[in-house]
Length: 203
Image 1 (cartoon, one colour):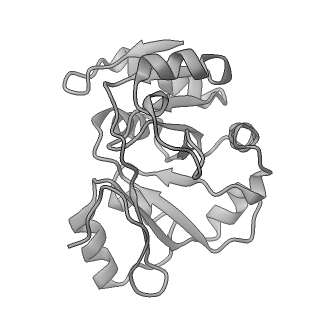
Image 2 (cartoon, rainbow, N blue to C red):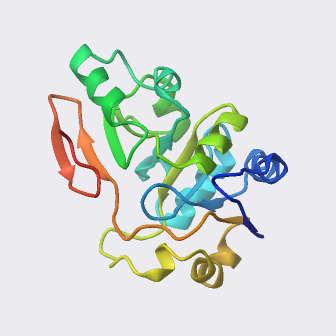
């Protein structure tokens, strides 16, 4: 399924279509503030396994991030954030960043893993934030591309994405053309370390 959503005038009926697909365990491709991404309902274990299969890994080996609605929702999935880290998050989000933080016990349970950290995203994109808000919990997400891939049109152009990925997912959301840049990954587990410099700049 391919649907268009105007990020400046969001049709709630279309958002509800996306929610219904997510709750049934479907995969969706959606716009962010960088490249397009693929994701599923964090609360649906079957969907998490499907997303891991899409990436060619076992769930326990998957390195998914989660998209949260806002900073208050983050607190359900990460342990206590110190004041300097909170100030950094508050200044940077919503924005093109993935922050790696210490996970609560809730995260390993969802992903069948012992890992102690989780990547957190709050993209500056009204469409995916509205989906997460209406879903009531985060969306587990990963990039369409692999790290070794050069980012080309089929990661940013919704029509090209449709031609390439329609058979692999349940819904593709056209929210306009994406960007060629990726998010900046910032590890905040022990200080602040830039793991990958993307479009986001830490000031």
